[in-house]
Length: 230
Image (cartoon, rainbow, N blue to C red; front, side, top):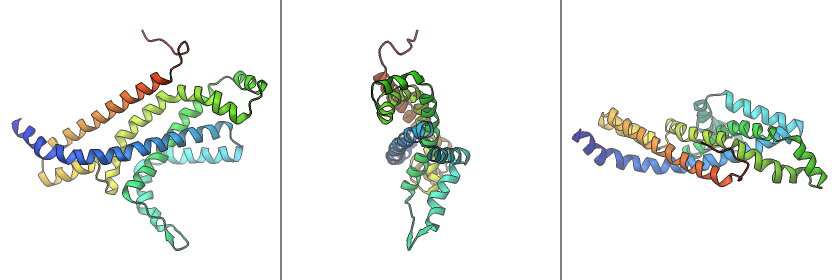
């Protein structure tokens, strides 16, 4: 046991701390991109013109229906083969991961947003129209805030998933937590110790993310409209 702790302190933790910062720099922008896409696409699918709504439906079907690993391979390995004029579309491993995770997460989050929007009673829309609000004002000021509150638990759950499947970035050479752990395991041949600590790091990340999301949910609660817990 002493050997495990000394190896963890001397080798594992310093290596994973460097990978932890890379994982955070990957997860945060990917999560923000996913939320932005989810809200935008969800709103278009419910209230947008039919051609644009159908396009967004196709986007959601594509990114929910294909494996995330395949999507990452496309953004990193296949996209450079597509040229616009003389310019090749090349993404760094980090940016390929952010784009891949953001687009995939946004597709799932749009479903939660769409469900939240559809749960708003039509009477509120008619009342807003009677008050002289434009459709855009109605959606942005009345419907979307309520829908986002209702969709937040689902969107938060998707962000938790994003924290965990961010480990797939290592397959396109990103030196995140999993990538650093894999390199250390290969050089030390101490796979058990390394990946136990890697799992603990991800557990800590998920715990922090869940705590932050719970604070956001509490901040967005409206007194008298939220269900009370026993």
